[in-house]
Length: 304
Length: 302
Image (cartoon, rainbow over all chains, first blue to last red; front, side):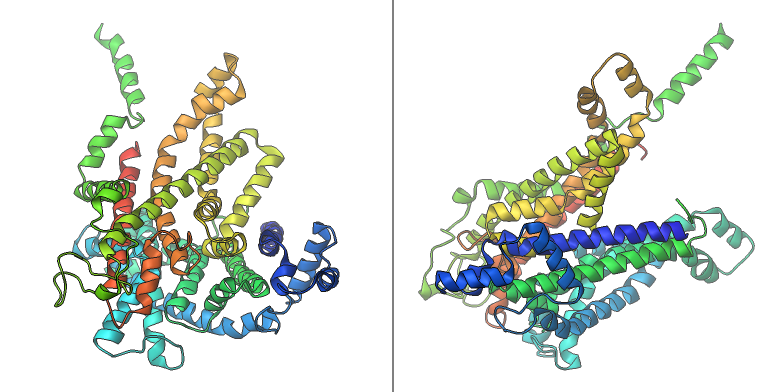
């Protein structure tokens, strides 16, 4: 167990270095950072800035410096807002996480019962409708779902606001949008992990013993199906955050995603770097936690 | 002698069980599914529209006319049969733009997958066959790619390199290859110990030839299924990037960009965002249906 966690920790560090490398590369792939910061400055001033930014140092030195600063939350000042990029990102992080978690909760509330029922009554009407809905849901672009919801609820029926994030009414449509993106993913996982368990001997034994059907499903089967469910859900977190970035843009929600997209348009690289880095860190740590939890909770796989 | 012939007959039987799916058998299995056939038909229609866009589209997708801006679709009051799906805020024909937009979607989808397959299959083959330290390095890169949110990675690099068709293809291609590396590596590891590889090596066949002639063909069906489903994802991702304004540039209409425009006029003209979205939905759904059925059809166990 300890050996496993240590191995995973080493991998975590390697992945973090990889993420840093990619984030670091964003600025350098864009060409000359100095001409982005002060596009109209005379050459003398540029040289001073270049010196100050350490752009003459070898790339490896620059990278080490970037990692050192990023670890302390220093990504430099936003070119546009003139304030620390890290602060801009962290201010908006709660909004993004709230949206993500709310949608996740919504998706779980829908996917869990429907997925379980579909697996138990495999091939029946509910299962077939659900499977069809999964196909449909996975083929729909998130932003389009959002706009269609706006058309219905805001334009047609005038029930909910078109955009924003200031009252509970403005939270409904974004949550529905991102939830509709997440639910099909979850539903598929719930159904397949339940199907896998339901066919096993111990479930048959429980039934043969005369245990009530809802107990067999709810207690015996679900307990064992829950493990892969949690893991795969955790692994989908990156996808979900990507969906959040798009949803924020559709509904003009002041979150990290919208900040990043805006920063990309303004070529505000410190903000892009800070935002991408922090979101990636969240995904990486969720993946790590889920990985370790899986092994911790699963007595069958302790060491491999 | 009856007794003597019995064991050999049983043996012949046993040999037949894990028979690989032959093309015709797979096709029969595939064609038995009406959903997959429907998907195939939709897909053919979309590909046809994309290829023949210049002849099929009723209007020039770029021609503007302020006099006929915001014409609703033909069945709505004020609609006109000249513009079946209506026009946008500068009077461009929506239908023609959707037909031309199919080109970008399919092109990006297919090319990105080609990049992913080339990178992923090569690295997977090398990783599995060579093993050792190289294997560790490649699989670590796979891990990093896998943990990075793909859309963010794509956004960041399109931002840095500037939006263009080539950038989008490369970015989507280089963020989606890890699944092939994983699958191919796993298959190589499983195949490496098989007798027919042993036999080939005993006959003096070189490593490269073993890889290309004996190992690679065995990974074919997995790659076909994975890449079909990835085309669908790549189309969705391209649409998302276009929607966020970092797509292939402004010159050619894309579905995502049309929907982004529709978002701005959502309270004025519902048809602007609705129809391009339906085009994406139909195309991606069709590919998913075909891909899902392909997976079953190519699986020798079912």
